[in-house]
Length: 246
Image (cartoon, rainbow, N blue to C red; front, side):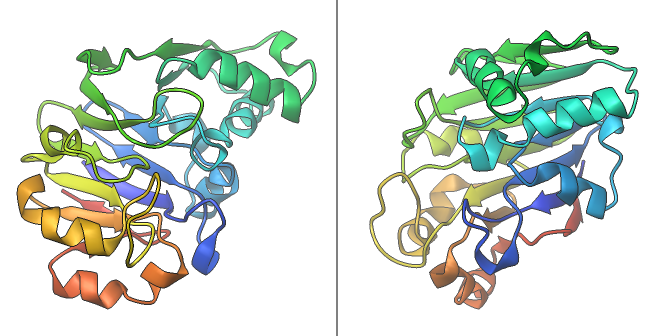
């Protein structure tokens, strides 16, 4: 797999980072994992052609993780995309995307599309297939008006795992175990946070997570100021435009 980070930031763009968006090239397809509000310009700055993306897999339905979808979809129409686009997300994705489309571009949901796109809602905890990948999700602790999930994605050769946004939960353990790369949110350096992890909480859990490699992302200023401590502990640190093959 090849990971290119279009956005590694929190909801507020701390450190000048774009909202969460991971561009993942696998043995089966080209995917986005999350598509935050800034995703489209971030992708074009890489540069990545959005029309090469086969599907989008969403961890949860906050704007900094899914708010870029209306722009991605309408850009595809005006750039004359031809191949299908799949959007896979937790229960509630279809209604939330309809609301987003209408809020951003009224009457856009009635647009006559020149390419096929669809939304698949993924039942939490039920193994499924997304564009030839094995996908399993687990519900985590992060209020978003719908189930928020961590996810584990395999193309049959490698495993990419991702925490989504969450405070500590043992549900992360089977998601991360033996993953070739586990990307984990680490919002702050210290403290017991509601809906998010801190380095103080995460660091003692790294051994139990048992991923082959762990990368932290979604950091606020307090964590960005202390990332060298994470690196010293053997953890990778996400950054916009970082490319990693694994």
